[in-house]
View 1 (cartoon, one colour):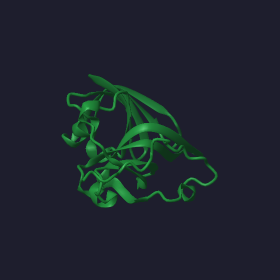
View 2 (view 1 turned 135 degrees about the vertical axis):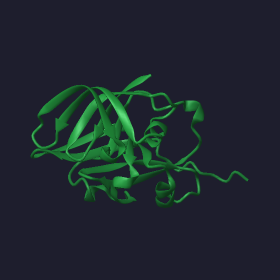
View 3 (view 1 turned 135 degrees about the horizontal axis):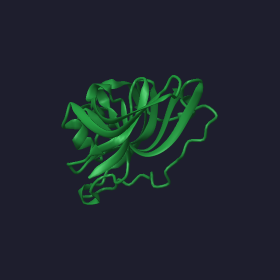
View 4 (view 1 turned 120 degrees about the horizontal axis):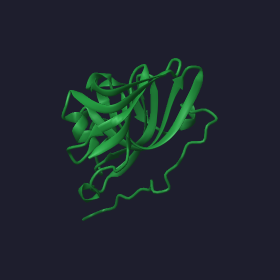
Length: 180
């Protein structure tokens, strides 16, 4: 199955199609060092100019964030997790979103033990495009943990996004209970 993606690199966004031959995008990204895109369009963060290429191979080292457009994987494989709202900086991008961990797992420790690419949901993504500040609400992204400059719990997102309302997920409730 081919999925539309937006890959965020250090100096551009890359729109394209990627063949998903595993169940989850994070599995695909963690399982390879390069990815073959079809119908790739590069959009410069500096001046917005675009360049199209019918095929392009992008290296994992160049991918900071991947926005997944379409299905988020097999719902049958999902397990009960605890949602942790986190903020992180990946190259020129600030990401605020939900990191999902098993109950009882420290989110920061769990983040560093995961594979190179880690999924987050209910994202607000911020970056500069030319002189314009861009804020995007996105359902799900996968971030390159190796390129993360910092990560912290998002106790007060107004520090990162001053004067901007942040989308709050009404489903983000404390769902842990004693299973004994």
